[in-house]
Image (tube, rainbow, N blue to C red; front, side, top):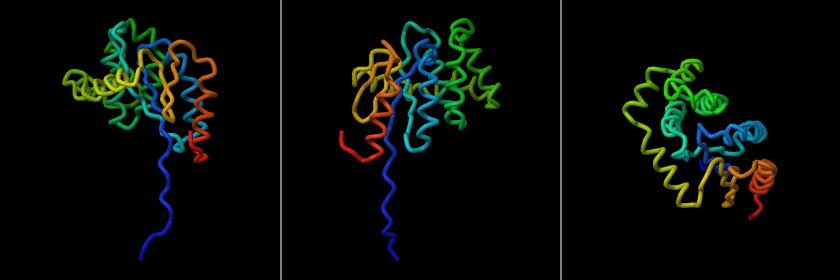
Length: 174
């Protein structure tokens, strides 16, 4: 017996180049929440790491976010850390473990992951890919082959992302 039902097309991808110690990424959080709520699983919103050298806890925060994704609560963790950017500036890595504990994640495993560096290659690969496609700051969005820089201004970006996502979901070419 053959299954002739059409395969469900892959959801369009929105790559969000983000840094968890970035005030601009914190500002973009409401837009990200709105996009995730509006599209659900019809839009694959992927967190991509782009830690900036000027933020000394950004690299550790990126690794911690990857651990949260491994533990099944990546977006909740990402949002919780972004909601506490000034506190991350002050407290550093202990805040990353504290947030994990507050979300009911295995905080000891977070601590171990930060020490053993198990997620460093993912963060490094994201950063290298970001540089290769011209990402210079955060947040930067890539959808449908178009790069949108949110580091300068968030003004109008959610609307532009929705316009592109709606076109992609309708199956219209760029």
